[in-house]
Structures are given as structure tokens and as C-alpha cells.
Length: 437
Length: 166
Image 1: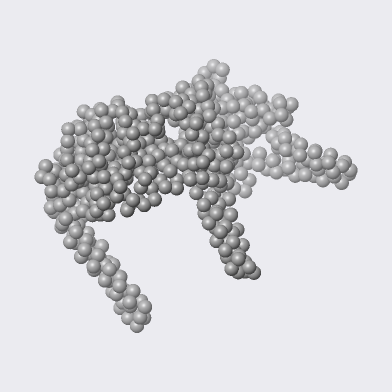
Image 2 (image 1 turned 180 degrees about the horizontal axis):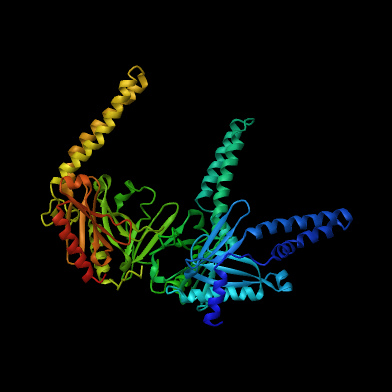
């Protein structure tokens, strides 16, 4: 399409428009195989056929109402705006400058009829994807090329049809569910169940035990479902534009993060994951867009087996050299009077590239940050720590889930480590411009 | 270097803040305590006959008075504990009596230097300088500076950060 043609079609798209008017019918047909099966199973007679046709028409009516309210256009701020909702109005805006992909999707029914859907995805969390159903194949192609053309004109635009994913890792959904079921909320579930059983045993005819049980199970279930829907279909990959992360069942979030924006990496292992050798990898990402209230990605991968860690890090963060088997400086003996549970786990490690700190009794945590990306170094000491002769060393990173604090260092060692770390920070001073973080 | 030197305590080569900061913080203590005491007195006046309320109000007054006196006494040491120094390639700020801390910010990591002075600070002709990095946990605020000193410090830090490649 030539430039002027793009301009012409863009002109069309500047006013709100609906998708094709056959949409309600196609959507009903798309949903009706179940109906057909039901008719066949129950047996075809007048009543069943009548009810089936009735349901079909109700479906058409419902889809028609929602179709009538759904409009889309390209607004003045260069966003694809989609308004929808019969009872509750909903407006979604996808910034074309953050475009990730425009795909033409053709479910079976549309393949028979010459219609298709357009799936538009932008970078960001939450509502980062819309599917417009249904458009004539030609219209869909036009919409796609207009959006792609606009994205290319934007100065900050990434190339939407950019290089392919060179390497990808997908988290099996079964393992995701299992891993989330084995996190901290499980302990509350177990404790809640024990308490409930105790209450039932003490007071067999009162309802309190059952209510407690229902509340615990319900609470844990809601947490689990929330986690699963948000992290479903998790995939992380590498393309020339950076690390691509996408996940989500109902709303899909997809990000492309330049590796230089990853400021710190954390490994988290709840106690129940230990025998399974699973880890979660969290990240602190710099320069997430604060103006649009969208936070950047916090999880690099929700669950991964330890045997795959080196492959993952080798592909995604090759410069980091995340080797966990290293020279750890452990916490002082007296630390057990301040952190009784995790004293033996607390340790810090410096090598030429990374600052690492580990902690945690039940849930084990480990954080790693390259010296060049430590923003400032703090040493703190409370009154009780002072009595014990221990201090804490904090390597300050950009906001995010990974925290890098070395606790329980004997005073003399803390001074040494702090000096050593400062030297490494100065030596590793990379050319940081404001775009890098 | 031992840990006490790390936390500036007593060493002379750290720059100190203006002692007027003491008077400023004392005023703040009074300004917080007086409204609380007023509220308690009003409650006492209207509920003199209700034993429980009376008891609570007296406890509240006691807590406010005792903690105000305690903070009043600590302010002197607190002000003396604040020190900062500009090194070759970093700024160090240290403070705290009970909970001691020292933060070191390399000039190359500085994002912006902020000079601020609230109305009460201005009345005492004081200003604060705060350093920001990309990390929210960088806690490098120097209170109690003369406005001219604050401006000098800001310019010095800005020129350092410029040479550090920001």
C-alpha cells in the first residue's frame, strides 16, 4: 500500500466504526457446535429442535447487542480505541507506539465465510490485547497494514514485524498450577484445616468448624486462581529487540524488555519446592513507564527446575554469569540471636561481576545484581545488632521484588565487604545514559 | 577502618550540619505535641465524669509529654550524629544514634539533586539537600544546611555527576 493510500484508509479509521454486521450470526454459529451435539444426543424431535433454535436466536440477540455497542477507531493520540459493553461501558486504548503484533486470526467458521478477526497486541501489563471480530478479509488486511504503518512512523516504535523469537521457554500450565498450590498460601490452608478439624472435634454439632474450613479453603482457592489466571501460558523468549515475556489467561500481558533494563535477578524457593528442585525467578526492571501507571514485569519465569537454570540464564542474561556455587561470606555466629531461623542461611558473595545475597528460612531467597547497576550502598545497624557486633549491607536497586540485603555480617567483615563492593562499583562503572535504565 | 569510623561517630573529617537544626526540630516537637495535648484537654473537659475516658485521656497526655521530652533530649544527639562528606567519586551521608546508617552514592549513579526548604525551615533559614538515584531506597538526605551551603553542595554534586558521565 502506498503512503497516500495509507493516509486515505487512516482517514476512514479516525471515526468510530463497527465490525461487520454479520458478526452476531457468525459468533452464534461459532458457539453452536455444542448446541448441535446436544440436539443429536437428546434426539431430534420438534421440542428439542424448537428449543435449540430458540437458544440460537437468543444467542444472536445477545451477540447483536454487544456488537452494536462495540466500536473501534484510531484516536488523536494515535491509539487504537475500542469501546464496548451493553450495561457497563468499557473503553480500551492501545498505544500504537507500543505495538507488539497485529495478527489475523481465522476461526473455522470464518474460514468458510470470508471473514476474519484481527488481534492487536501492545507491550504492557493487563489490558494489552484486543481481538476485533469479525471483519471482511480485505478490511482486516487494511486495518493490519494501517496499524503497522502508523507504528513504523512513530519515532519510538519498535519494528512490529521485527525479528523472530530466537529462543523461547514455555512453562507447562500443569506445573504452574502445582507450583502455585505449593506456595505459602498452602501453609495457611493446612493450618486452617487443622484448626477447623480441631474445632469440629471439640464441638461436633456447631457450625463453626465448617465455616472456618470453608473460609480457609475459599481464601486459598481465590489466591491460587488469581495466580494461575495471571501467569497462565507463561512464555519467555529472546528476540533481537530483547527479552519477550507474555502470560495471562483472561487478559494477556506481554512485554519486551531490553536486557540492560534488568537491574537485579532473584531466585525464590518456597519450602515445598525444595525437594522438587523448583525455583521462581523475579526481576527488578528499570525505567518502567510510571506515567501510565503500568508496572513492568516482575517475574521472569514463575517456575523452573534447577537443571534448566543455567540454560535459561545463558540464553537470556549471558553477561551475568549467574553461578550459585561460589565463595559465600556467611553470617557471623552471633547472628542467631537476631535472626534465629535464617542465621545459617544468610550470606553474601562478591565476584568480579555480581553482588549476591541470600536469606530465608522457609522460603529461600537469593538476589543478584551486577556491580554497575547498584545505585547506592548502605550499611545500617540497629541497637540489638550493635550489641551483637553485626551490621547489614544493602545494595540499593531500582524498585522491584528483588531486595539485596546482606544481614548478620560481623562488623569487621561488613566494613571490608562494603569497601570491596564500593571499589567494584567504581571499577564497573559502565557508560550509563538515562535511556539505559 | 572499624565500624565506628564507618558510621562517622566522632570523626572530625566529616562535614556537620548547622546546629540551628536543633532549634528547628525542637519547634517541630512542640508543634506536634500542642495540638495533641489540646485535643486531650478538650476531651477531659467534656468527659470529666466518665471514668474510662478520663483515664484514657490522662494516659494519652502522659504518653505525649514523656515522648516529647524524650525526643527533645534525643534531638541534640541526633543532630550531632549527622555527617556527610564528598569524596573523590561518591557522596557519603551518615546519621542515627540507635539505628545507625551510612549511605554511599557514587556520583555516576546520581539522577537528581533536590534542594528543599519548607516554611518553618525557611524561618530558621535552613534547607535540605536530597540525592536521588534510580533506586527508591537510596536514603541520602542532608537536613539542616544553610541555604547558601545547600546551593553550593547542589552545584558541586551536579558538576561531579556531569564529570562522572551522567
